[in-house]
Image (tube, rainbow, N blue to C red):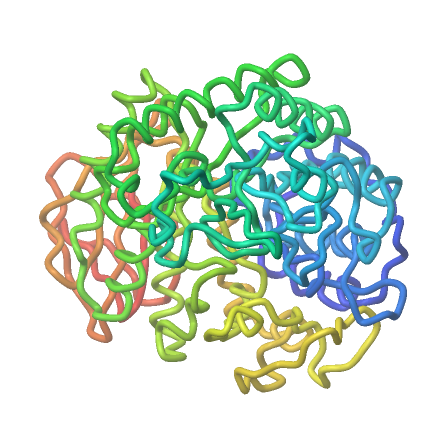
Length: 518
């Protein structure tokens, strides 16, 4: 079933109606005939959709809105932490094999996975195993020096430098009331696990297999680099890198018994392109933080910051380290960063060009919930994770209320308003994601830089067995003309704006327009 713009508009009213927790089943055959988009969508369950009226989003709310996600065109969802936790965000877990009771039950989760799979949507869980909560039964037991859990964590000795700075820039060692000090890279409430302990490694492989046996398709690996990147001196340590990669390779092999195709995408928050390739030997993908900066800066400055050349070099290194196969995971912003619309100072044209670049890159692009509406958000973190905006009025069935809205977005920045507007950012995202289904090279093509487009046009070639394409984005507010080679790329496959035309060996791109040529 292809979701073109007119169909999306026809569906708009239905997609906003309250849905039952157990969304209607969709026959598997309805989703297997279409090509994938390989696009993932990050969801903070607390802010998504509330089905029991307590103001907090829940797993049944994710199930209820699967058809909205399907209409957007995504093929996978990343659920931010859904395990029991004392915090609102969930990144400090107390039980790795249970569901946060605010979000529902294990039966709710199993139904969500089943209904997502019926729609051809994969489910990726946030796996937060660098550290636990300080309220974890493991950590409470570990405070007894004689407990078998003592060595599941790292404790200071008389020789320890207690003034060490962590890899995140804060204190590394934290004190208990009895004077014992333990290691925590992030904050005191998140004590790090000790991965030199075989029992910890075995337990975390067991946790991974537990969720794969529930039907999960893979994991987003939180703080993947910090398993061994503890102190600021570890950040450039080849020893720490080697130990990190060895652990994740062991984990990947260990969970293969439950699902040999489980997909692992790591949070490796490095901002130098050269630091990412080694991770491809142990993981399937890493989030491309350097690329996110480059995409947003290019859109904002209306100049190509060498995107094609940088990616051609980076992907070559990825291939070498991954032994010939890799997935990239490009994105614009996530739950830890200022929302991309805020980074772009609310400029709608820059938002559209950033989205167009993201969604015409190979790999698995990730969209942060509400990004497709143009939601804004700046620090503190709670303001980056505010409720999804469903209704013009800000009130309605399913709207979460655990947190208010701080950014000042009006009623036009809502699903209800944007469904009905064929020129909305929401329908722009739908169009671009549909392009990924229609043009295989956008998903799987080998990227080569295109050097002849000028500083205001970001361009790259994608070579694929089903056909090579040339992708071009006019980042500026002025129409651009690009000379084309004599024998290639004279057929206009896709374009975002009227006025895009190929004539006399040249492409005319209107202001902020994008095109794909064959």
